[in-house]
Image 1 (tube, rainbow over the protein chains, first blue to last red):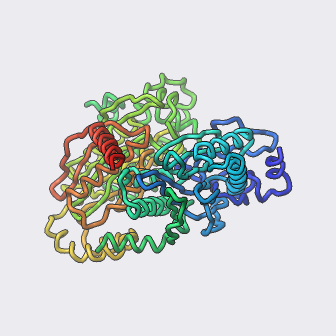
Image 2: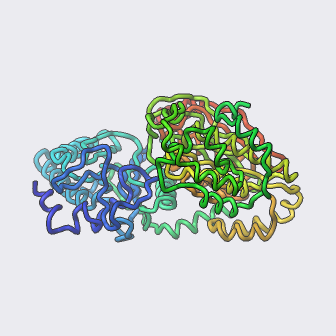
Length: 273
Length: 358
């Protein structure tokens, strides 16, 4: 398929087999965080997933879960909070600390990116196009459920071909706040709280203990910020800045962008004083 | 003794009573003797090495912390006959450890955590033992007291942890009898780490966190507490700096070490081990600082274990908590987290209905 031929072959820089893949998917392999992280040869991070049969014909192996990032989203009474970090890694090299991992699909729908940067941005832009077409045809906004279904169906056709994408589609529609997790395996799950990426486990601890339905907007923003910060503190593949968005009945607003180091000093002072 | 029965130590005990004990080694000495005495390169020999426990104990008591250069040489030469000897009946523990794979390659299915604060060391762990998908025991003990002022949190294979904890306890007791004082936590960690080193590369899987209070009166500790507290506040995240400060200031006080069967031995102020550890780490990083009160520390430890059990499938059931102070360790009653889970569920439901009303 087009995507596969683009990814393999000459543009080796963007193939999953080579270490230069400019992705959010970093060093951590599918086997978990405890992995020592030294693959066979020093440059490649083509991970051998023990759970799936290795391909011999050069099509890249699946990079299951554990994409090198932390993104989270949770629902509460005033909508949905979306918080992401901004680090992109290529193996153990930090390629960028200022990546935008939230894609603004339309003024009331947001999509987060985890996994391969190319896959995420491409498919979510395609989704934006589909949503706009729907809006024009049906003279009403698309629901979050339908948008996530469109994305899941598009990506399902490429299942097994090496796409790597773990995204959360967040928005506000007739039914209220909506949050769906969609990934390149074909999963599409509705839920109240998700965290995706290698730092997701750290974020879950903080989020679970602080999330309540009746949070105020400021409290919810602070919770999202804190959760991402804790994840960047412990996870090597997350860092940079914390980008925070709030989705409410009128659409989404960008709340803040905080550098993790600044937050570190801020929380330390808070703990002392 | 039970330990003898497990490991067939009977014959070794008799031998040891007659041999002379060399001077008690410091950590470095042990290491050098280990390295020289053992055939590490040959995996096969290691395999036979530890299965026929009785024989190899006769030849190389190094495994269990004894130093004997004389017996060392004989050990090396007498290895070969073992290789050729027919396969001995495999001990049950090893057979089962090979057929039942660990849930994750390097993450042990548990959640244990420990941190230091002004009131001593707080240690907490869940109580679920899993066996690749089955909850083998919902009420196991992962925090094992080693002596009055030292507690070990275990993670990895339960069998390995229980055995090595008992071996460590025995060695520490022997040290105490010979020298009239308890071995420091640092020494105990070093001892454990050196005992485990010969098994590096095998399937032995032990990740222990040793929490203890080193001897000395509480008075000494309190005098330097103020200075330490202010220093700690400034440099909360630089462990190495704090370690050197502490060394200069006093030798007694709380200690926390992490020892792993792959050879890691780390000193620190906060550790969490196991598959549920990321969930616990984020809670602990948020809330732990030196100036916590004992009650605050208890509630943070409990919350961290609870959050880990909430998300991690291999952690669950109850939470055990131990608090180590200069007077020794005290144990809090085991608490079933199921209650907490239902309470939280009720609370969430309540919140939702409340907000819908509004």
